[in-house]
Image (cartoon, rainbow, N blue to C red; front, top):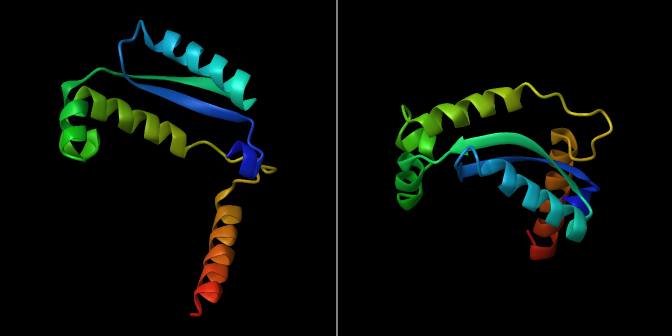
Length: 116
């Protein structure tokens, strides 16, 4: 996303981490992202270690679908609700309408190259 769309800032939600280790995981990832990718990470928080997440992953399902009453599902839902309220920056090249325009254009090019 940084190379293709010029995004230089990302938000990170640490999953399956103990509350006391999540800030360390974030700090390490932020340092590596800055050093090797020249991007910045903002810390959103953490989803606590929950057996429901491991069980859901082994069944190729989300924790919200596999165990909707678990602590992890509640935390995912809370973060998703908060994220859905974010407003997109007006100058953000990765806005949904730009993405959809690029996807449609790309699919047309692909179809033309395939002889469709």
